[in-house]
Length: 327
Image 1 (cartoon, one colour):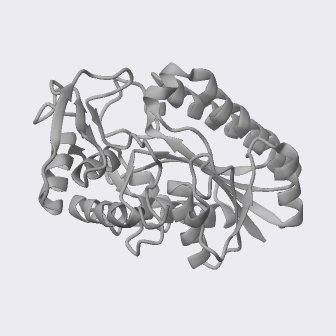
Image 2 (cartoon, one colour):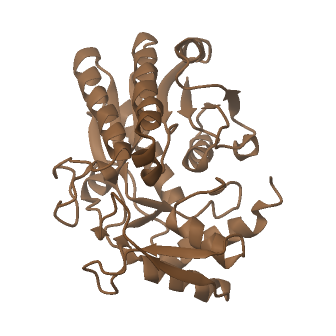
């Protein structure tokens, strides 16, 4: 049997491939390489270049590679872009997910792990956020992901598919062994942007909102190291294969750091200063978003290994410093 990893050449997907291989899985990575990188896929995995929305291709892979599980990372992830280009997000994140889910059902796949997001929650949700909180996303990105969660729930009820929808908070850092990392050009993830600024790859950093109701006025986010996140995916898959019921679970550490704290940590650990510009709030931004990860910890065989901002920053800096050698 094998695991199909969609978006397997991307930031999170390539880390998941590594963890799946380490747990003894046979891995097929499907990626159109629009934002991913061929070299990011571990050589022990099979890379298939193609579109997750190509139902015939996916069906053929499920049949010929004896796939029994899907980890679905492929999609578009830039929140502000989703506001400007909503149809792109409903195509990439919703319509193509529907096609993938249908191919999985028709191919007899029983286990499905989905890359969801904390952006599905409403703006007034109580902090820390629990899975039963109101889902009222304010951006097309969040709505596109919530629609896929709904499709999975309905499909599970009708066809017996078991799924885990993992709602990410803020994913950051890179593989400690520097085998892969956050490599997307023009990325908007906070730590990636700040690290690029520290290394002279950007002119500076914009801080969107300095008047939030937080200790230093900048937004507070729950950052989770990407390797901890992808280990949670492997744990979720093991849970499903062992007969676990479908589940929606938050993925975070349960505490937050402000934008200013992240900037300060990068300056301190890199030994470099850079321009920091104050800017207005963006549509869809929230002042404070922190997870309650109790369900994740209680249900899966998982505990964080890298719950430390300095460690997260060090891995991001180390990866960014040698990234140019891989492109």
